[in-house]
Each structure stands twice: as C-alpha cells, then as structure tokens.
Length: 254
Image (tube, rainbow, N blue to C red; front, side, top):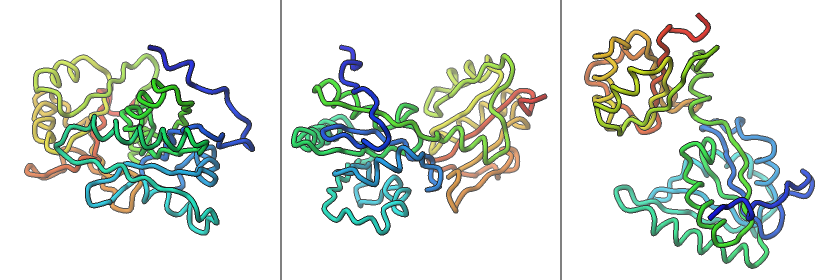
C-alpha cells in the first residue's frame, strides 16, 4: 500500500503546524543549532511532542531541542516519551506509540515526532511514519542534518567526489559481507559500531585501509572525539553513536 495519498500538500511557513497532522522532525546529530528553521518553527507551536527515550527516561532527542523550548509560553503542550527497551522487540512499542499519537491526531492536535539526524536515514521515525500513514493520518517529514553529513564536516573529510561510489555500511553485518562491501567501493561510512567495532576494525586492517580510515564518536556534541583509526589503542571500544569514514584516495578531492 502506498503512503503517498496520506502526505498533505505543503503548507505555507506561517500556517505550520497544521491541526491533525504528524510531523517527523529531523533535529540533527546533537548540536542544537543544527536544527532546520522549518523544524524549529513547527516545534514552537506543536500541541504534542513525541520522542524516543531509554527506559530511565533519558533522551538525546529531547536534550537536543531543550534550548529551543526554553521560555516557550505553550504550557499546555503534551509530551510523549516513547520508551525503548534495549534487547526487546521494538514493534510492540511502535504499535502502541502510533495508537497514542493517532488519538491526538483524531482530536485535531498537531504532533511533532523528534528524530535525531534525518528521519529517513536509519531514523526511528520511519517506523511510526509507516504505521500512521497506513492508518490514514496526514504525515509530513522534515529533513534533518544526518550523522553522516555531520561526521564528514567535523572531520574535514568530504565523503565523495566526481564518480566515486559511496556506500553506507552497518557495523552489524557479517565479516564476509563487510569485506565484500568495503572491497568494492571508493568510499564508505561505517555506522552502528558499538560492540561490532573490533570486527569492523579487523576487516579494515585486513583490506589495508587503516591509514585511510577516520574515526569519530558523538559528532557535534561536547563529548565529541575524532582520531585516525590507526591511532586508537588496540583494545579501544566504541559507543553506538560512532562512525568510521574511509576513502581509498585518502581524501576525496585527490
């Protein structure tokens, strides 16, 4: 079933947000100033704000937009924390969240769903988008600065140039799949490192690409760390919000 019919025609900036519409807001990788003007304007007037959160309530998405809500006079705004339990199936959580958001939409409220980075680039919002659109609710997506773009900018490392092939490679892939993907591309962004970091690093070393690899974690945040991959200690670990950028020429402009 196509979701196109559920996407409303674009409204003028002064008319946003539209009552009864859900907005997936890409709010960038972490630095609050990287939110787009459109996302900011919707955020200021939305009746409901929903965001992913850990079991203990901690939420990077809510943290990112906090400065933009400081002093906001909309005291009756409703907030929905979509609590994700690590290691547990996510589908029931998104099912319930979509039902709760749907009730607010039926009541004519506008709902802003926060998503770190860009909603449609490995973003959690896409799972709500599918459920809400298929239920017949109007849904719009506001693009955001993705983590990949932010990492490239912070590292001063253009991703690709000319006719380069750029691949986005998830760390959880098997060693064989990682080796095949990395061995057949000009440039790569390896994401979702976390506990898969030792395996990824091993494959990069086997392919002779370590001196072409740059490591970065928590891009644009105060705790950001970036370093050539080869300079990391052999027993180094990586958080989930980390990435390795590789270009076979070392720099894309060469």
